[in-house]
Length: 134
Image (cartoon, helix red, strand yellow):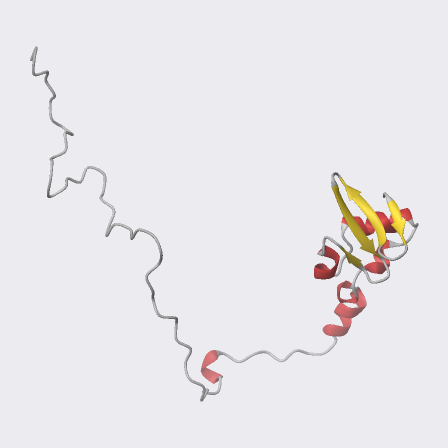
């Protein structure tokens, strides 16, 4: 914990990086707290510095009461696809294939030991001899 700014909140140092934590708005400059709804390490460090309970800063979506309230009602099962009503909307088609940038790949990869039909023959399996000393 480095210092306290009244306008911005707590400044928390993490190595060479400095993160600003606003406990009132439950925000941090790393944006992890806003995205997840769970305080980031910088927010927890700021709360520990001020002797606050970090578990109270967790979003209500992660609480047991919200979970029990969500599943307190019976959820109707979804019927299989044959029972779905037919849609009058047009079918979604895949996008058209387009030429990708860069050099196109070879048509196919040759197997190990496969000889080419044109050009030089491979030297595999042939006996090599010196043209001077034979």
